[in-house]
Length: 248
Image (cartoon, rainbow, N blue to C red; front, side):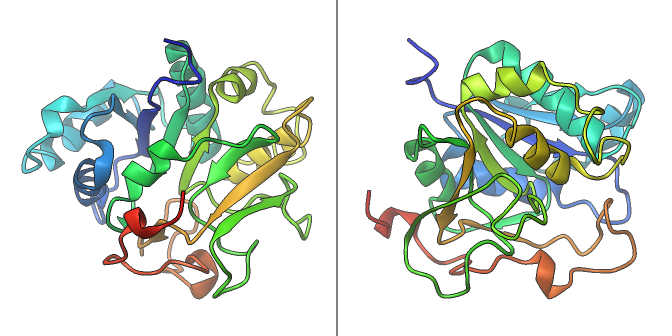
């Protein structure tokens, strides 16, 4: 079976955050809303000894044993963690359905994400948007440059589908050789800059409505500021919205 027809690999990126851990709730939702049949993997930004506290926090999750748990090595921040995650996942030769660890999903969200392929002209499809599409916009896929319609950058890696060829391409790029490459917590901005250089997939696609909402009050990228409105989805219809009702 080719990479174009295989189901995506689900990955969740996390780190050890004892004060506020959303991981268990997030993976339970992924399983419940359509992901249980997929290969699923948790990547931990941290050395091998960081796996034990993560494993302990998942003890109450019924399907936790079905998830792979991998260390990414010494904690390096979101940029290096994203790079290592995609480099490792590239070995699967399939699309990657990427989640951050602090999300609220609508009903059947993952089922929808599986069925919605990344358009040929897009380097990724995002199911969360905080600035590209106006609130109360109609259903559809909206196309933008990888650095955003405002050229201020790609904002947010909350929930992305990468096509298999782009996963491999990103794994071969020099992430530090970018404008923001020296920043430890700028994976989204660096991704946007890299994807702007892609030889053929020169846009990103935004799925409206958003199928996930960002709920993490404690952020590794923005410690101490809570969750301001600009870090929330512009078009999330609510946890009770059923993605099965959307047109194909």
